[in-house]
Length: 73
Ligand code: SF4
Ligand code: SF4
Image (tube, rainbow, N blue to C red; front, side, top):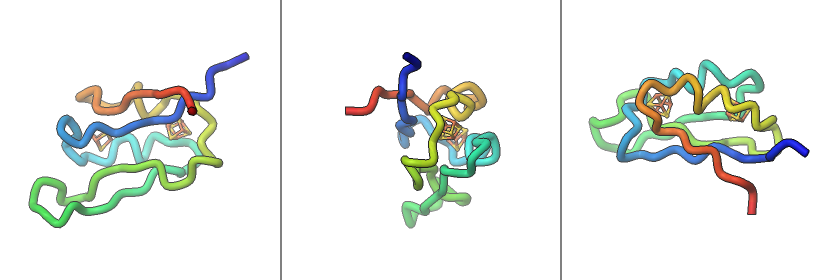
């Protein structure tokens, strides 16, 4: 059976470029601003976990490896 890992976004590495947001085929990643000027587009987070199909696209497209796929608890 395929892993049902979900993405975890490492804010210390993420540069808030939104590439992962655009890469997600089911649009389940949203962004939220931290209120600082580090993230003009907002940091990504998994907004709709049920919609995520664990396709790994977000992790594969992130240019700085800020997305880690983690198995569901
Ligand atoms: S694993 Fe796929 S479906 Fe899930 S958030 Fe990433 S790109 Fe979207
Ligand atoms: S692609 Fe990577 S660096 Fe860009 S917003 Fe997503 S997690 Fe952050």
